[in-house]
Figure 1: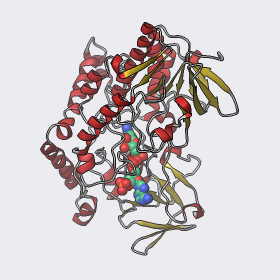
Figure 2: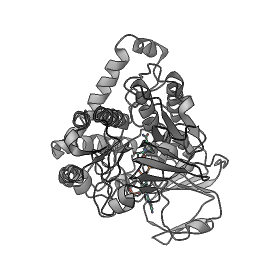
Figure 3: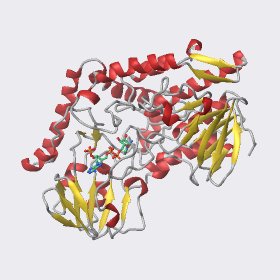
Figure 4: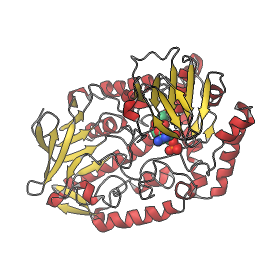
Length: 485
Ligand code: NAP
């Protein structure tokens, strides 16, 4: 590897690869992609739990410039998405830029030299002009601080670290958590286990999943000029219309609530079970899940929904707040990810020796989620307040990649060595964001979620339409940046 690559990308999921493709296209070839694992794919490499699939239709959850008429289903399984990313690496010639097994342990900005020092696990170190952090928002597993968790004697793992060496056939299995991952794997394992105990803290709102395989004929039609693009656009606008409820008028959420309640009523005939599955908060406050097989799985004879809080984990059992002890052989945590605290352990030191944790002591913030005041030439993809609950994050990634390229062009046009977003521009942007977010369903809907940090401030979501984000990030505003010669 060059001892001083011009640009260093961290991560080889959708964001890192999307950045690399566009860098090459723009004529930047002096870059590396550092990947801590031995393979590419990010989320779609790590999450291998049974039933793992995208919950955004594949024709939209893919690059706009790399449409794939051949998706097998409306919502493709993870292996197919990972293969899509591999095909992108092949097609765009990214392999020579990829470095596997290179975990970045620290980034430090050198004020005098105007470059970053990158430390990797094992002691390696090099310098680079710019860093693009494409490490994703959902990759640090969150394990709940339940007393006795370490004392459990049987196999125990997180959904994002699924232990495939454990055969669940005929076992008594407990699942803690009922989020987006759990609703996908619960139906798959329910068929195999002898008993499945699903511990639910808060019921999710669930919409039916309009999933279906594309027949060979449908795929042939999708290969006709413009057909895949038209389908993608139709999906985009259908999903984007969901933002009307939170961005324009909350009363529009009522229709979504009706769809979810009808789905629940149709799939759960038992009124007592239905009551325990009916959320008590406004729909949209947490991510609305989509599944057509989760409720039927809960209705199986060998499956039990437990809504009493998990109080203690023992060597071979789980004790809930009713005092009941449930004996289990295997424990699966579907408990989500550390999102707002994901960078807590990362050593990122910016100008004047300031750590990112200090810059973010009141909460993570950035300018349009991409640049952070005091950290010149550091670009975040899917950074603070750029997540979505209603549309494809690949759309946001593409907007951010274009924005980063705009920053690089600004640097070469002005012959500056680095750019640093002005603190006042970042502050004004975040004040506007938080003002909008404070009035939205995620803050007012009566639920807790990983969208909010420990102070109850939403540090994860973009509050409006995705096309607004796209429009606002088309070109970096020169006045928002200090250009460092
Ligand atoms: P999640 O949505 O954060 O769900 C975590 C679950 O664990 C929640 O039900 C939560 O309950 C529960 N939980 C956490 N701590 C607990 C405790 N101490 N006791 C009992 N329950 C506890 O996590 P996830 O399902 O892994 O999904 C995370 C995100 O990944 C999703 O929102 C989505 O963005 C993404 N995802 C996407 C796809 C896709 O297809 N695109 C698939 C899977 C995941 P509370 O609700 O009470 O907190």
